[in-house]
Image (cartoon, rainbow, N blue to C red; front, side, top):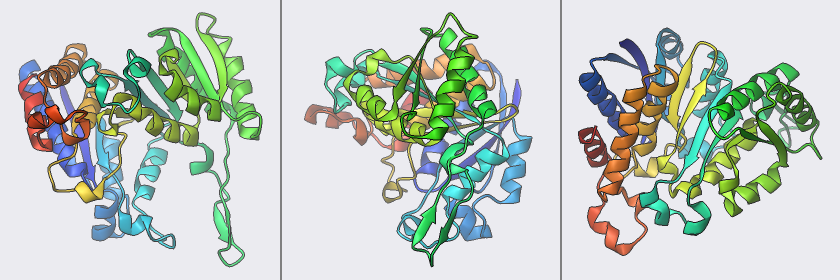
Length: 357
């Protein structure tokens, strides 16, 4: 198989973790006789500094011409601390999602048995947790208009908009994925307050009738935020809108023990982007301390969802499991003082996983 992969390392620790993910893909290609070519592009702060644009036209064209996109991280504190900044790194990723129509975000939440003590939650709470969050990615308050400041900047307006077709489209993805799992979907909204959520609940309910083999229930987002921590084992597939999904998946990362473990896939009709769910973590950039596992599992998802290479994605998963079973840890995974002797850096963790493929 020959595939071209657009690689967008981005900001902060992005380049370091992406190097490890590329290394893993190169090993897979060698073992299974595939040919993956990697074409690099600018995005985020790096792109702003070099072109003035967080998503240069050349990068967008590269992504459209590629078979899949591997993305690192985006963001910089100098923009976070400047509310008046007109151009921001995050605009590059939002524009990329919109331009490629990446309407569904798939975020698995899981626990490695060897890391059960890394979670701040009790072991009996997180044990056997395994669910997927299906997040709508191109609608809601992140993209709604009007979006403005008025009254001399003292009043701000953001608008949340959803159409029935957008909701139905993402709901079908959740129901189809649930059919391959435990056939249970929990739809998250705020239908007691928000008009968009009432439309969301009505549309999901109507769509769910076409999937009689899948059990559908609804939950308010505030209740869901509590239940994810209190009893994560109850969930199989969570379906939710853009902002709720963004917040809930970061919250759910504590179940796994570190946000540095969790990958994601953003998929549309023609294009797909794979990325770790964590941010740029700029203060760790260049220090060889970031956890590359989320980026490595993102390419595992790439092989699964875009290239449909079953043996190949399973070998990456098994290599990660084996490496953790051997006791190797990046510093974010250390739960006990006795584990510090096996703490290794970003590159070294990538090497261990690559060697275990």
